[in-house]
Image (tube, rainbow, N blue to C red; front, side):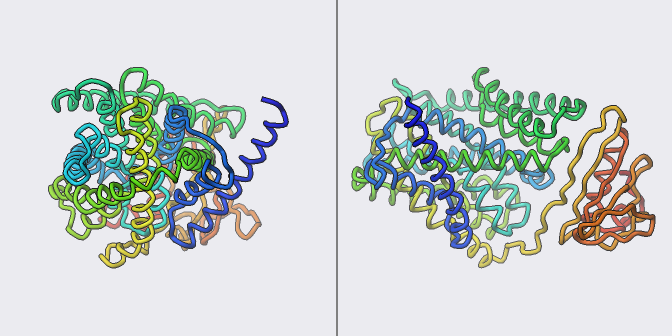
Length: 499
């Protein structure tokens, strides 16, 4: 490749990124999921668009799509608080496994009976479209004020269900007879178990290492964390397990381990995830040939209606009723099963395996994702309000950034008092930090000062807390408790809680 051609490619890439960034602003105002705008950019640049770029490499799309999904799942795990999703994990796990199987079966039967597709293509359609998309869920739900119980369930489900769906799609796309249901079930269980173990091992060992090793530059921590999540994927995949599940679990552990420079790490991962999303969606748009899609319009609408009106509600009803999810919440969860890049990437697998009818399947999935994301995404906030289950009082989490002082056997905690924090109005002495921890500096209105015992905290304050290694975790737990419960946190039950 000549230097001149490389310069042109870099120019095009930078322009696409800038347009995509502007598209995020447009999508946030209009309520349209940004993925549709990215897909549109790819279509405009493609063979049938103004860019006339010819791109038809489904295998490369699959490989790069997998890489992008790893980054997106890693960012999702790093940005998810365990306390938010912990109560919902059992329900999310059941919905992501048994619920996915129910959805695959219902869509497959509907596609076979209503569109005339053979059973292999019908099963592939069911498997491909039954995975909720992590990128779509993470980007849309974080702008919808849902109760943490529901948002946690949806985020956990989107992080968990990629793994079983990938296994099913690969199994259905492989040449030869499809394995019996009990063989597929055993394969799914084994791969998920391996993914869980690898994710736990890499996440715990990585967190332990990063908490006790002071790197020479703060910029190395985000790189190390992202590298660990990629290592988890590679380890899980090489052991014939679910690399996607390993990635998400590893990232979840690292994101909740209170590592040094946590906010900076999450910001770095979020930036990488945006690049991955933009690149993946534009690439998928390039792969599409709109002039070949006319025959896929009716099948896409039929399969989409079966998915949204029958398969997803059935999977939610049958799997979540035992968890005492109310009917209003079930309606919202049924409508919030957002699809995005994951189904389109998975639809390239049958194309790579040269399954008969794979091109038509890809077009069907692409149109289904566009139409029903356009329908579901903007209407989700309206539905939440209509069902009276939105949580407008939801506050952002307290930001606590930690930096180790290796030679001094201590930590510096940087704490930002947010606009909804109950730290405001609390005196320094009322924080009741454990012995070995102290607030040493407050930055207020651009000026810094050393506080006294009676100094009153205010919204917008930035605190610098010094803590020894032994009490570092207790100090942060205490600060977070006061942030959520005010100065009486730990005393409300009549007995003091030990932090």
